[in-house]
Image 1 (spheres, helix red, strand yellow):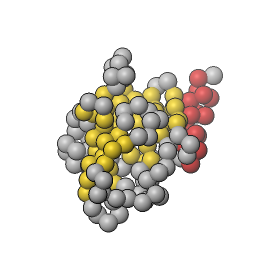
Image 2 (cartoon, rainbow, N blue to C red):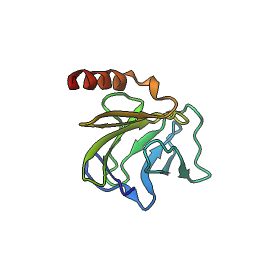
Image 3 (cartoon, one colour):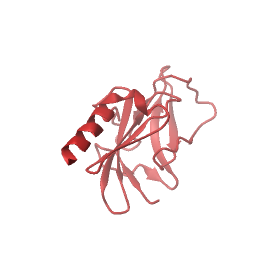
Image 4 (cartoon, rainbow, N blue to C red):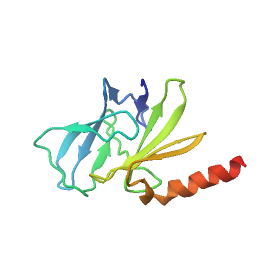
Length: 137
């Protein structure tokens, strides 16, 4: 899996080795780095042990290069990045910024792939996927 991840604003590469790197900020406005596994649907991550956030806390994500907020326009509780797969196809990736919530959406011309036990919470993608299926028929 050699998928690359890009900031949707500066188009800089934010994957380093086996992780996607984000600058994050918790609700107490403390800042840190979060390393996220690049496989869509794998929710493992690494952060400094002294940087804390609580289950259910809304975390702010930023590009570590241009420092732009990665808030998704489609929903305030989602983060947006771009994934480029091995065939150089671009996919819009959206994932939950709520600590402990497992919701990820891979959006491309082929449709929408939702992963995570909480992916049913964001109906915008369910409705969009139903529209994709309707248009394909």
